[in-house]
Image (cartoon, rainbow, N blue to C red; front, side, top):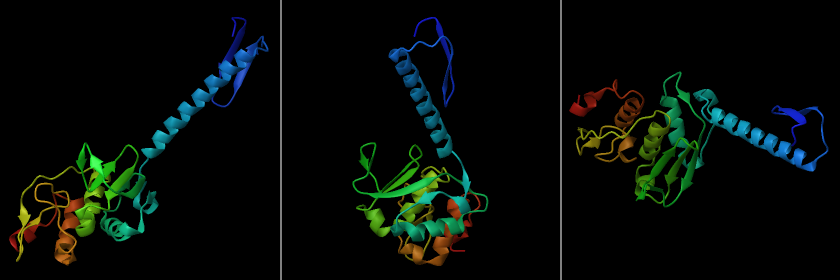
Amino acid sequence: MNGNSAYVFSIKEVYFINKIEKDPRTCLKCGTYLFTLNISVLLILSALCSCQKYDLEHWPVTYPPEVEYQMNLFIDNAPQGLEVKPLTIKLTSNLYLQGTKVAGKSSHKDNTIYLDTTSAKWKQARTSLVMHELGHYVLRRQHLHDTTTILDTWQGYPISFMNWATGKPSDWNLKREDLLEFYMEELFNPKQADVSITTGG
């Protein structure tokens, strides 16, 4: 475009002012600029939408039927006013994180939780696995390295779904209502959970 032509760009239209020359190269340059501008705006809007927070009643979440029980358990125990981001839960196999095979992985970048259906945790501790990943994604909780265990008649259980040092409780253990209630309380309120169960009280 030569110096005799001037133009102003907006998101939707391109307005030419002063003298407009019928030069195909001019239209091509302007069209390319406008296309690039529109793509940039769309990317920004997409990023803003992905960061938007919702309440549980309007949570844009999709998940396979294999984890419906776990998702209902999480929602039913979540405190009022909990803000959540859009989420998709996907089932996969041979899941790796930084070169290490893992049973689950949470990604805030693409708003997704990945679960490995070939893992032992998926088969034996699915509820613990899903709660662990929801703890990362929704509650922003980190791994808990506390080696404290919940004292039980038969064996010691990890103190949290987020525990990393002593593993996660199996779904068989969670059939005990007192244990499940404790773990759900600890997941949402780690500093307020009733730990009397740890002493058999």
